[in-house]
Image (tube, rainbow, N blue to C red; front, top):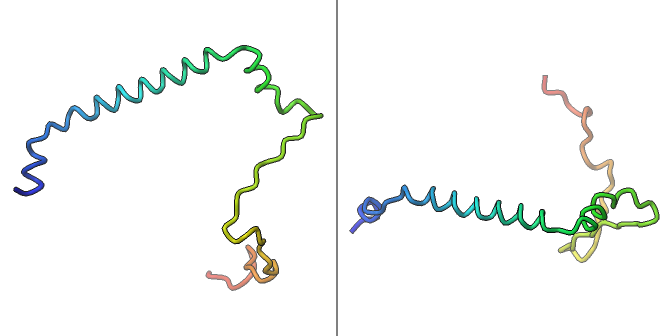
Length: 87
């Protein structure tokens, strides 16, 4: 029995409906989660950039090269607007 014969017996029209229900449930779940947060938590998150005494340092991604930085000279890289013209 070939794959096309197997697939021809399946009723594939049900999958978009299942996906719609799944994503609708996920959307309602996220909306519910947001709406049930305490007002103080939302206000704290909204004003996080206004706290000048609070320093937030970004996370540094883990490097697979053991933390070594690129040591090539910046002059070795091609710079925009310089070089041969392709005109």
